[in-house]
Image (cartoon, rainbow, N blue to C red; front, side, top):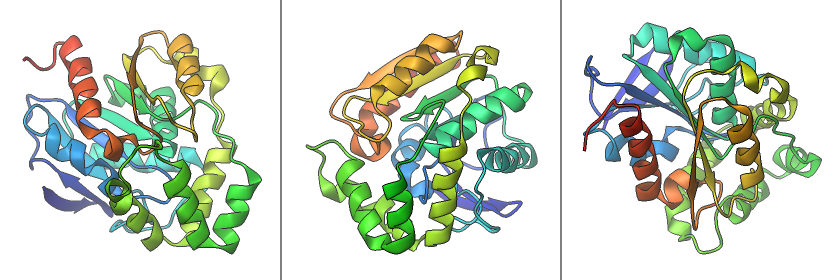
Length: 259
């Protein structure tokens, strides 16, 4: 992988510069996380499409401060995509990353020919207990993320990269992310999205249960659905091969890749 920074946004890429004749997957991590969540996708799909995984502002190696509104993160991502001149950018986000993707498809759809929503929803209310635990006992919160963020059968070592990234993230930034999630609600606007959208759910996701994806699939006009078994909320690390196959199938259906 290649590591770069443009406009203060740190990212890794499967190849750089991106190939002009290929679409570009732009991966966006979840609350308190970093681009390490998507390393298996950046590497695993790099032979077929351009792959880029970003650190949101205030996360990982990116500059700036974390946000407490999804709209602000969406503005940051739109600016990054334009500054990096990414060909045919397709945003793919998990949890708050998915909320950011939805906001981009509602407010900046002209930039994106398609999108991928992974383990997310149109409304992301957060239990007060989670907000309180982040503020009072951050290590306990990280333990909760490991326990509830994965399917029961997941090898815990698979989660180590994202748990370490969350541990390195300032608690105030993670709290801002979850506050942004709690404020997010675009349920009434999904009918405004007219681009192809792949909606992916983990069968055992306890943080954004599959019913969230059911709603997205029903309300978005050109939605397609992928269901990944034996996966929880941290799907990209739990079942990377299955996720990569679902994304490749989506692109194949759009006629953007062969084989």
